[in-house]
Length: 362
Image (cartoon, rainbow, N blue to C red; front, side, top):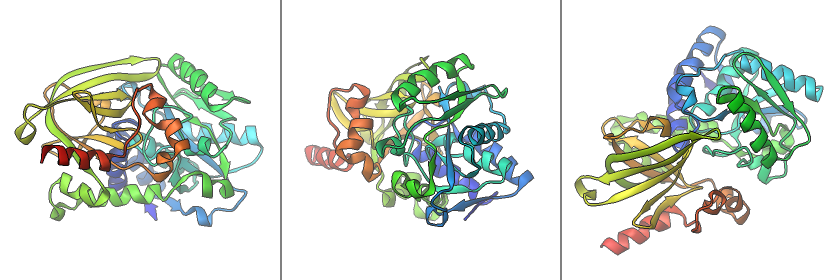
């Protein structure tokens, strides 16, 4: 598969859904990726089955608050700087890029890097969605070391982290990213082809493209109808009544209140945010939570509204999709479940929560 001017808009739309409100808005990322492939040619997406066992794969993402990216636009040369620094550190050439997360703008950054370095992109990622912290990645779940890690800003300043576990990397790299102006890009949890076949979420790039194609097919009904075959569930339709969001410690944190309209009139739900939408609650009852994918759609256009774009008065439809299976295991939930974010409730799959609610109101 090639990512080009035809497939990139589909990929961006699918990545927006999988971002759970985070990963950064795909709008500027799509423009950057389109410019890169127009100038340098399409990016090849390769199956991990075709990657040599000893090939070096570079997972990459942005690190910082997505609010910052609305004004702080990256430099397309960052991919070259990241690759060069990792090759010097590891003493061998890179074979391919990988999106650390297939959600939001972080799904598009490696497309730009791939175009500028002439390397392919593997059809996999480390999350199957977006999560806010460095250690919340499938490679960590499978014991892949987080370091060496390279952190680069848009001016070419870079720092190499060595001999550090993922939790300490999260703390130190994020602090440095704040010092870099609130946002930077990284390569961490680098791995070889053999390890990637078992330690990543496979097929996530092609899945995002398929989601984008489905959402773009107007013959399938409105956006909500098109999400149904993907396991999507509508949680509430309403108007944003209050936004409490602030940038703290390199994260966009806060909550949003949604006042139900039409069939959801007299309902008031709260969306908890840490870069991504983490949980939706109504009168203390959990409607959905991490690791399931919670996304806000514009009720009029069907487009994704990222957490940094949420505003008072917007008409939104909150939807949720099931998380990849690995995150629903005991080990996965320990890493990315509600209690990993200090919520005092256990995870229940969204499909079970939706079924319970239907029974209670019937």
